[in-house]
Amino acid sequence: MAHAIASRRAILPRGVSPRTFARAIREFTEIVGGRNVSVSPAELVPYAHDVIMVPPIWPSAVVRPGSVEEIQRIVRVAGALRIPLWPLSTGKNIAYGRMMAVDPGNVIVDLARMNRILEVNEQLAYAVVEPGVTYAQLYKHLRDRNLPLWLDPPATAPGAGPLGNTVERGVGYTPYGEHFLFSCGM
Ligand SMILES: Cc1cc2nc3c(=O)[nH]c(=O)nc-3n(C[C@H](O)[C@H](O)[C@H](O)COP(=O)(O)OP(=O)(O)OC[C@H]3O[C@@H](n4cnc5c(N)ncnc54)[C@H](O)[C@@H]3O)c2cc1C
Image (cartoon, rainbow, N blue to C red; front, side, top):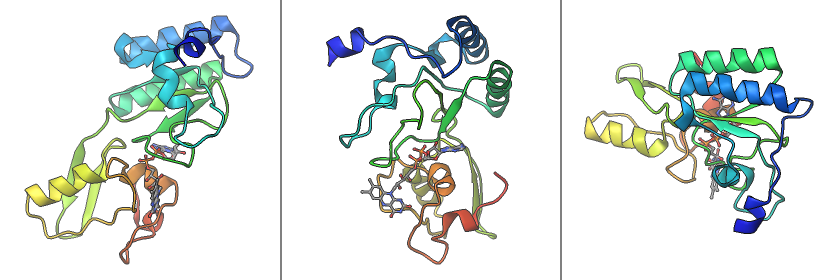
């Protein structure tokens, strides 16, 4: 495995020249800082594999923004340079592709750093969360504050999150179980 990773050739997004890709990486690095951009095969391993035995799909890079403004800037660079992006919220899409993009060479935009619970409205029973918030985190938030609300999670790892599950049309177990139907303001 280590040898396979070390000898893997860099993958570029489809139709993007090495020069344009290098420019995109420079610009992404200016936006999020060097620690939050990686093209290293070793760091891309989790983004290339599911836990089930399907062939890997290697991305070209991963970028980890920390704010809405950084996402906006990343999308502007990607639009200008025609770089395909693949967003992840908590990346626990286990057995449905996990963190893999559908095409090789995409730049993964990993939103896990954005994990703040911005608001829980007890009276109207809604929460405003950033994409990296997990079900476990939201559950703990409700418990710690003794809020009389019931979370509607899928039957999966507590490390998965409401945003990823909702955009994937996930389902839970209460009358609010059709998650996309009960979401707004995305
Ligand atoms: C044992 C088991 C049981 C499960 N039971 C259930 C169940 O009962 N109900 C159910 O619904 N699911 C179930 N699942 C599936 C699992 O809940 C979902 O795969 C998980 O919720 C995905 O959430 P995530 O936060 O990890 O999403 P992510 O992996 O972050 O994203 C999921 C998808 O949404 C896209 N996406 C994520 N964030 C964004 C964004 N900000 N903008 C645009 N697109 C985005 C990603 O590209 C990806 O395709 C089960 C899985 C397992 C392994």
